[in-house]
Image 1 (cartoon, rainbow, N blue to C red):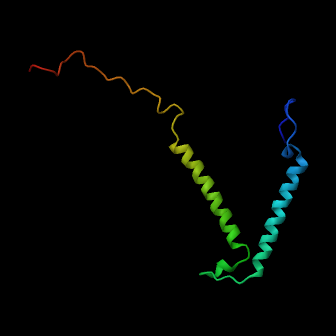
Image 2: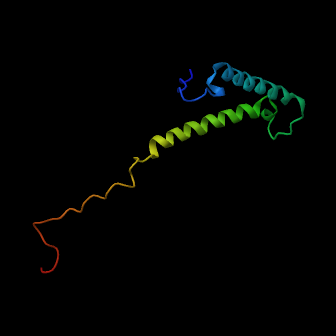
Image 3: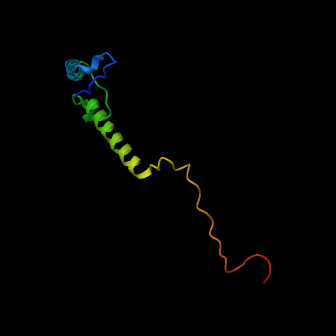
Length: 104
């Protein structure tokens, strides 16, 4: 569903669900045509499975999913707080009972 258009703005082209549907159909038809075009030339792969119809497209999609999932994992495990570099270091702890400076 598209968000409502504010009163002071004209609706944009992608605010119309019919236009989104057109783009979706164009992408699907393009994928089908490119997969069929894969039949039209001789492949010189190193391995037999590289000659399968649509192999490179499927491999690319799987690699894409892997990169997105790896990025999600990295964000969860490596991300710092928004104010990480603005935080003040903890104050030093002073031992008021003993003095390590000077005499023995």
